[in-house]
Length: 40
Image (tube, rainbow, N blue to C red; front, side, top):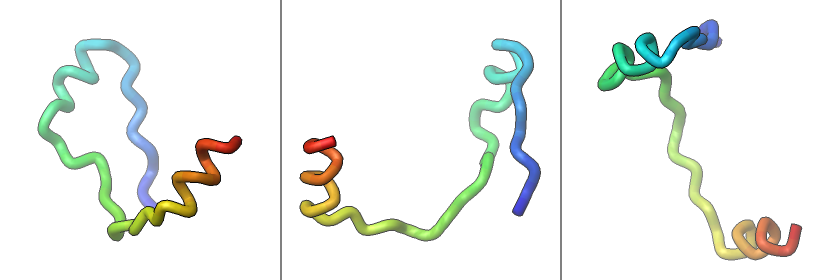
């Protein structure tokens, strides 16, 4: 796992626009999961 990127200023965050910060596989969200979240 890659180290997390930590932005220490608003300018660093702006400079990071357009950069890929990480990626993962798609996660299918089913209605049951949405309903469970709504109930919490």
